[in-house]
Length: 101
Image (tube, rainbow, N blue to C red; front, side, top):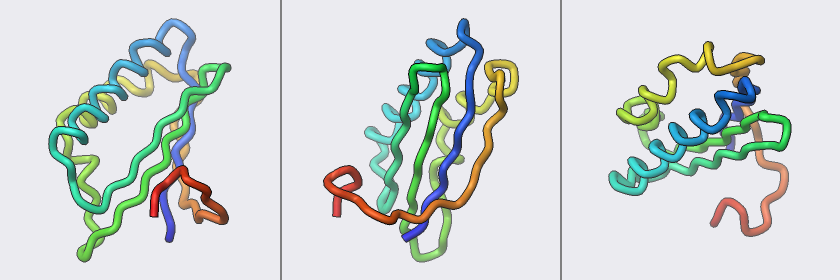
Protein backbone atom coordinates (compact mmCIF):
# COMPACT_ATOMS: atom_id res chain seq x y z
CA UNK A 1 0.00 0.00 0.00
CA UNK A 2 1.32 3.43 -0.91
CA UNK A 3 0.80 6.74 0.75
CA UNK A 4 1.83 10.35 0.47
CA UNK A 5 4.49 11.92 2.68
CA UNK A 6 4.77 15.71 2.94
CA UNK A 7 7.56 17.47 4.81
CA UNK A 8 8.15 21.19 5.45
CA UNK A 9 9.61 23.49 8.08
CA UNK A 10 7.75 26.45 9.51
CA UNK A 11 9.05 29.75 10.76
CA UNK A 12 9.49 29.49 14.55
CA UNK A 13 6.85 32.15 15.18
CA UNK A 14 4.35 30.32 12.94
CA UNK A 15 4.73 26.76 14.28
CA UNK A 16 1.96 27.12 16.86
CA UNK A 17 -0.49 28.55 14.29
CA UNK A 18 0.39 25.74 11.88
CA UNK A 19 -0.24 23.19 14.63
CA UNK A 20 -3.62 24.80 15.40
CA UNK A 21 -4.65 24.58 11.74
CA UNK A 22 -3.64 20.91 11.60
CA UNK A 23 -5.69 20.18 14.71
CA UNK A 24 -8.73 21.66 12.94
CA UNK A 25 -8.19 19.23 10.05
CA UNK A 26 -8.21 16.32 12.48
CA UNK A 27 -11.35 17.65 14.17
CA UNK A 28 -13.13 17.74 10.82
CA UNK A 29 -11.88 14.26 9.96
CA UNK A 30 -13.25 13.01 13.29
CA UNK A 31 -16.60 14.67 12.62
CA UNK A 32 -16.97 13.45 9.03
CA UNK A 33 -15.20 10.06 9.37
CA UNK A 34 -14.41 9.55 5.67
CA UNK A 35 -13.93 5.87 4.88
CA UNK A 36 -10.53 4.54 3.91
CA UNK A 37 -8.59 7.58 5.13
CA UNK A 38 -5.53 7.31 7.35
CA UNK A 39 -3.71 10.49 8.23
CA UNK A 40 -0.85 11.24 10.60
CA UNK A 41 0.87 14.55 11.31
CA UNK A 42 4.08 14.92 13.31
CA UNK A 43 5.92 17.99 14.56
CA UNK A 44 9.67 17.62 15.00
CA UNK A 45 11.74 19.65 17.48
CA UNK A 46 13.28 21.82 14.73
CA UNK A 47 9.89 23.09 13.49
CA UNK A 48 9.64 20.51 10.73
CA UNK A 49 6.21 19.02 10.14
CA UNK A 50 5.71 15.62 8.53
CA UNK A 51 2.31 14.47 7.25
CA UNK A 52 1.61 10.93 6.09
CA UNK A 53 -1.68 9.99 4.47
CA UNK A 54 -3.13 6.91 2.87
CA UNK A 55 -6.46 6.70 1.11
CA UNK A 56 -8.19 3.50 0.10
CA UNK A 57 -11.08 4.16 -2.24
CA UNK A 58 -12.56 2.53 -5.31
CA UNK A 59 -12.24 5.65 -7.43
CA UNK A 60 -8.88 6.78 -6.01
CA UNK A 61 -10.37 10.06 -4.79
CA UNK A 62 -8.82 11.67 -1.74
CA UNK A 63 -11.40 13.46 0.44
CA UNK A 64 -8.80 15.36 2.50
CA UNK A 65 -8.27 18.27 0.04
CA UNK A 66 -12.04 18.80 0.00
CA UNK A 67 -12.22 19.44 3.75
CA UNK A 68 -12.91 23.05 4.74
CA UNK A 69 -10.28 22.85 7.49
CA UNK A 70 -7.68 21.50 5.04
CA UNK A 71 -8.33 24.36 2.63
CA UNK A 72 -7.89 26.79 5.56
CA UNK A 73 -4.64 24.99 6.47
CA UNK A 74 -3.34 25.40 2.91
CA UNK A 75 -4.11 29.11 2.86
CA UNK A 76 -0.91 30.94 3.72
CA UNK A 77 1.25 27.81 3.99
CA UNK A 78 4.05 29.44 1.95
CA UNK A 79 4.14 32.40 4.31
CA UNK A 80 4.32 30.11 7.36
CA UNK A 81 7.26 28.11 5.98
CA UNK A 82 11.01 28.45 5.87
CA UNK A 83 11.21 25.32 3.73
CA UNK A 84 8.16 24.83 1.48
CA UNK A 85 6.18 21.59 1.47
CA UNK A 86 7.70 18.76 -0.51
CA UNK A 87 5.45 15.82 -1.26
CA UNK A 88 6.31 12.37 -2.45
CA UNK A 89 4.92 8.90 -2.67
CA UNK A 90 5.84 6.59 0.19
CA UNK A 91 5.59 2.84 0.58
CA UNK A 92 5.28 1.27 4.01
CA UNK A 93 8.11 -1.17 4.59
CA UNK A 94 7.16 -2.06 8.15
CA UNK A 95 4.38 -1.15 10.56
CA UNK A 96 3.93 -2.26 14.12
CA UNK A 97 0.77 -0.88 15.66
CA UNK A 98 1.06 2.63 14.16
CA UNK A 99 -1.28 2.48 11.22
CA UNK A 100 -3.81 -0.15 12.24
CA UNK A 101 -4.66 -3.19 10.14
